[in-house]
Image 1 (tube, rainbow, N blue to C red):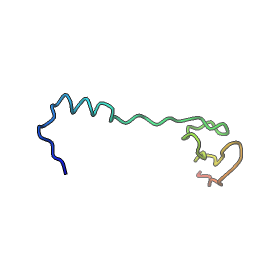
Image 2 (image 1 turned 90 degrees about the horizontal axis):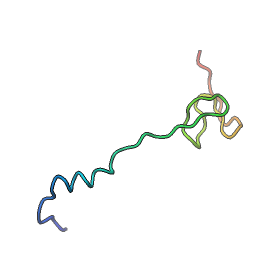
Image 3 (image 1 turned 60 degrees about the vertical axis):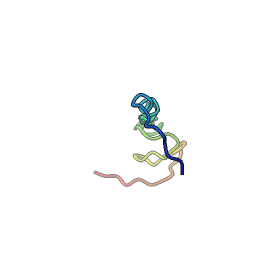
Image 4 (image 1 turned 180 degrees about the vertical axis):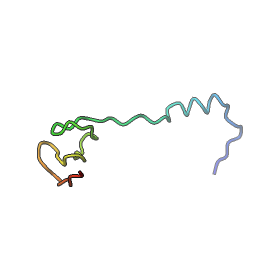
Length: 61
């Protein structure tokens, strides 16, 4: 396996790592209950997806 002949400079290392930052995930609004949810997934609050109930959600009170 190949080994590096010389060490990389700090600038070269940090330039490479400049694109490694994590971005915040996007949220969309549920058309049924208007809560924030991940896009293309069932709403965890009401259980609806694309206008129909997919899962039954227990009510917590």
